[in-house]
Amino acid sequence: MKPPAKQKLPLGLLAWRVLSLAAQLFAPLLLSQRAARGKEDRARMKERLGVTAQPRPDGRLVWVHGASVGESLAALPLIEQLQAQMPGTSVLVTSGTVTSARMMQARLPPSNGSHAAFHQFVPLDTPRAVARFLDHWKPDAGLFVESDLWPNLILAAATRNIPLALVNARISARSAAGWKRAPGTAKRLLAAFDAVLAQDEEIAARFRALGARNVTVAGSLKADAPPLGCDATALTALQAQIGARPVLLAAQTHSGEDETVLPAHDMLRARFPDLLTIIVPRHLERAGDIEMLCGARAARRRSLGHAISEQTQVYIADTLGELGLFYRLAPFAFVGGTLVPMGGHNPLEPAVLKRAVLAGPHRASAVTAYQAILGAQGFGSVTSSGDIAREAARLFGDRDGTSAAGAAAARGAATLAGAVARTLAVLQTLLRDHARA
Image 1 (tube, helix red, strand yellow):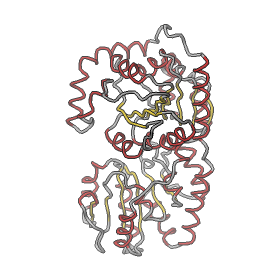
Image 2 (spheres, one colour; image 1 turned 180 degrees about the vertical axis):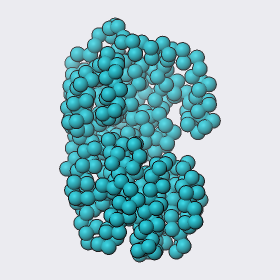
Image 3 (cartoon, one colour; image 1 turned 90 degrees about the vertical axis):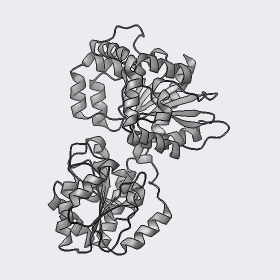
Image 4 (tube, one colour; image 1 turned 90 degrees about the horizontal axis):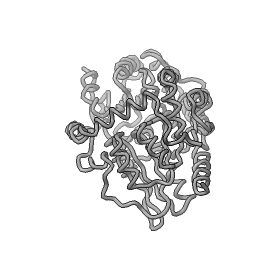
């Protein structure tokens, strides 16, 4: 059972409630300032206040919430299977970033007469915005993806007896230690979830220690995602521009990682003078900084329409939604967010395309996936420019071995599949139990 709705709030949650009440007065100004910086969609800002012109669809409505692009992408295979296996169910998808909103609008399954899948911005975590949102949509169940925990939103949903599950759940050791300093707040917030589906047993143990109920291991939704797509025409054009040149791909890099990749490029050029290095920054606005870091290295930017010529040494792939294209241009990839303490980005994306994976030591966001893939390959850990150059040189010099490593990465990724089916089973149980209550 969830905690009684009238149970006294722990001090941390009470303080948040008071601050968020006060913040309601300044919410429109805050949103306007964020819109000026490109952080909000000005045409849809009312959604952040819980207001929408879109009517609630008839019938059962499942609400799926993810913070940003990564969580939203992880939810896509779940949404597709949910609609395939639960006819007549519509899906409301919420997220908090402009980029994720655009991506979901482009990639959500098409609606038909019996169900719909659509996106709304998650409301600001103020009592008024949350109440408007929940009063309008009245979801039959809510699935929160990974770890985006907004206290007012979660507790208000629980108070309305909306069954909730935290799915694809993860929490780092550092975050868990932080929550332990406010045990009452953590326990009350997590107790609002009827089920917690953790990505692995280590994560599950952290949630149990914080007071979460009904914690099980379901695996990662990302392991069930289909391969990233790409534009076939663009792929053919880039393959023609690159020809037989060896390609060093650094995907989803952060500041501090390009400074490691570029010296590795220099080391490799001594042995492979026609080397092309492709850098795909995690945040596109960093493209200009990367171009400056290139210095005398001949660099080109995709967003500016630059083609790859024989003289191009570094190609900066600063466009949205083309990661699948660039994974197909290289036989292996360094995955960013791992040489700096960001937790690492998704290694399953290159692995399912049979690309070998190189990664630094910071892998807390996908520990099990990295273990499965690097373990299957038998290599891939790097910590320096020299490590990247050494592994890349070995792979460039052994085409058959590189192909075998990519196949091994795919097999490692395949061992993690099944989270979508497990998550749907829990959702169906929640809906059934809620209907009986």
